Length: 191
Image 1: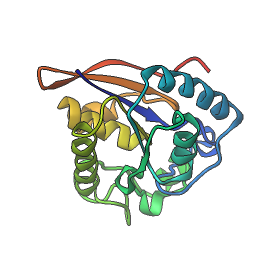
Image 2: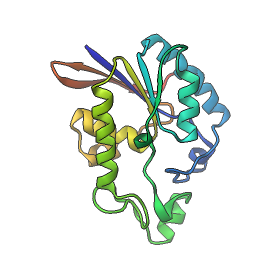
Image 3: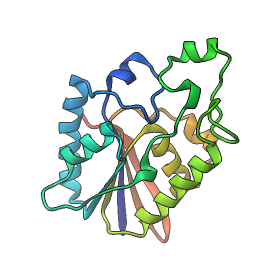
Image 4: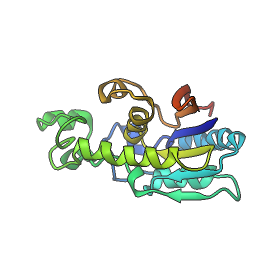
């Protein structure tokens, strides 16, 4: 049976502020540091054969902290969060006051941003790479990538996953049975 954990990075200052930060980095909060410790316990219990991480600081710092000694850590560019373009760094109210909305399904997610279909394609390529690699595997990434990994692995629609709350430090535990990935749990560990 193949196993995979998908981990969203812990809380950052930008998360607390409610800012749209795709590829802009933000420091991890004190709560986020406690969440990293809780994530490390979860990952250690899984005994992963490999940990994959986004190169962005908030995810990479987390991955380095939670990767057990001797376990390979592979940094994948395509695990970066979506780029929000002109909405990058804005609060939701600031974005809407400028007449912008987010669209993850068609063209750019926001003016000047990454195209939703291209974002989905790069995340699907990562899903195939991880699903075909060593098991158990841990993937440390961001909220948008986390959701699109679920679309690729579980056959969910983009609309379904964007309707899900994926809190900071959330862990999705997936197991493959009879060729199909099943979501066994989705929750953050106790920090």
